[in-house]
Image (cartoon, rainbow, N blue to C red; front, side, top):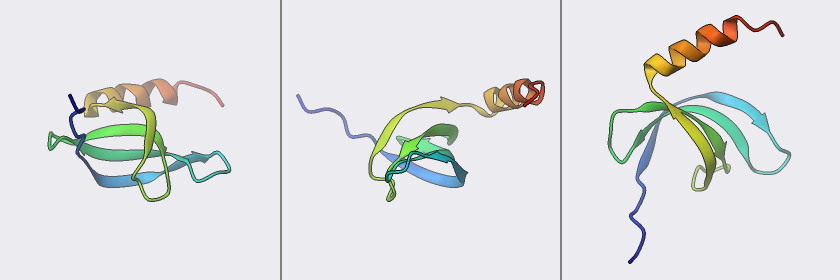
Length: 75
């Protein structure tokens, strides 16, 4: 049985967090997965966004909570 096709649309790219020296970049994007409501997504992508690595997808509320936590960290 073939795996189900994963559909995604990058609605907005907020930027690159890091690059590993190859063609892979860790990015923060707003992505619609399988035509659902877009969510914030942090993962590695190749240059043309045809391949991706493991990542984390967050709701707007989760991003707000993460932002509050990060604001408490002294760097």
